[in-house]
Length: 268
Image 1 (spheres, rainbow, N blue to C red):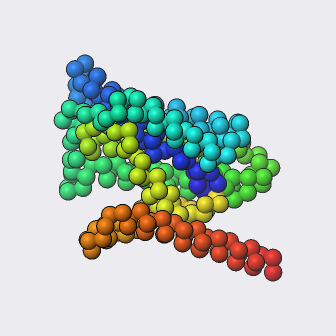
Image 2: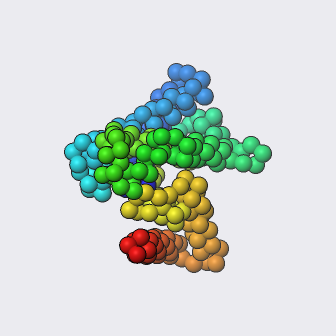
Image 3: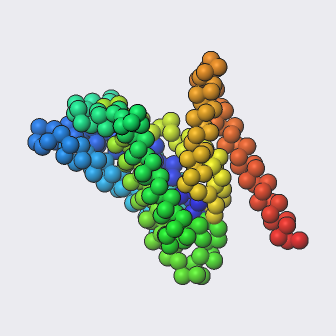
């Protein structure tokens, strides 16, 4: 999303909405079908429900020309409210042994959740680096007018991006519910800052046109090292937010300096 020059501020509570929906659906399906099928039903429900606000975001930005920051911020509030309404203002517990094993089990001492994340990262890396969709994404972020003149359907591409963003948040919500055996509306609230920080630290420009999936993974590791490092040296946890925020600011300043420098070199 950021590579294309946009942003999605709603994904934190779309994730929470998906976690609540997954918990409810699995709870309803448990008596009706085998446990693995109940979990699969919950996963599909979470991803499909999360695609709805993603589609609305895409239509607002691509068709109605609403600025991404404003449109997704509005959806942030809508998804938050719907998630809390569905959850009744509390968490939604799930009693399903297969679901709990998926969230907390290991194979060769590697958590299942990590394996799912690794597979998903590989798929997204391939899409972004090896497909026409990925190349169009870079082109739109670098120069939207030039991409339009090259025949790229900007509106369709942006709509697909926001749907994909919503579905990713839906998968994250499902995995959160599996990890804690409960759905919570606020599941993704603290992750919005970290997700943007991971992308920026990983080398992507907030102005669009550059960035990689693997760089984002590296950025996520940097954030984890900062946060857990502060815990290990007994620094108050509130300093984690300050440190990540400072890293974002520094990364943006470095990106701006690089853009000015490259612009100056090109003018010469």
